Length: 454
Image (cartoon, rainbow, N blue to C red; front, side):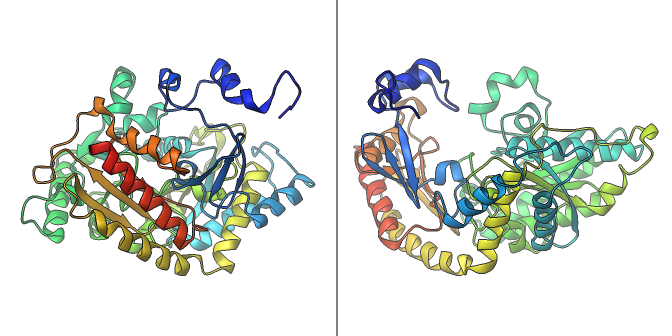
């Protein structure tokens, strides 16, 4: 960035607001909410141009797993840049793309044997949806054009991904552009009926899924699910037994299962992939975010040899999957992903995370009886606090009061990035976070909640 008199560091925020339209943002907010001008990052910390430091408690939208500028990933990128930056992946290949596919297949649930690259999470969902639909078409079963999603689900903001999303904030405006999924009740443990056990809740929601499949299976291509945690829908969490039961139902009714592990993959839930906790293999496994350690955009869709075989034919058959992105399988992004996987292979990351997640759980116990907290939940390195007006009735604060925003603004005064999902305050730090840093982010969140509900 230039430091000329025309572009001083001190004016970066003002320059930004004059020209940049930010994602998931009402730009008018920045008339009162500061725009953070970040110039450096190291480990779990971001440094602003004014010298202030901020703990990245949300891993920069859940992408950063080992901390910013991890030396191994940085070195790999520098080495790769001296060799090859980017080529199209149609009719060509390169070592990082092949090696990464080999590594992903080695690590993924058994039976996944083909890797299709894309650029980001939403694009991966588009690939999986189209591939499932096209598979059935290639088999002559053209009536299979619909998808089943869970209530409260979020899968991205491109047209197909948004179509299987059930978060009104994102979906409602664009509803006329979207196709309608069939919705099955979420196994979200927060929605358990009074006196209902976890196993009873799983059985009840699987029963509703069975009813839906029994009625519509002949027109359904796939069921799509976020394994263990429905992230953007409020960090809603469910039992792994639901995934095992869902896999059985998909097999019984002969429909595909798409596992959207874009946010929960690469150790977030305590295992490398969330599906491992149910010992299942989906028909499509969608990965992104942590795939490159949070350095470069890349996504991958893993699928089976049987699905690949349905597309493998003479070109004249019209069965080819003619889907592409210009930067598909970018060599730099693939190299970053290879270094990320190497860190998982060479270091006891998941073991160390157990200690961190245990400490995080212990610190959050202080909020379990808070009069304005209806739930404290955690899966691995993801934790969330449900902030409500009334604990006993679970009455929510009106959305227009923006209580969660008050927590965010307090966090900025204390040097911690806590970007809530409405009134859900959550933690998803990079794995390099220390015990002291966990203490800091929880202390700041507790302070923020006290101020937000006052």
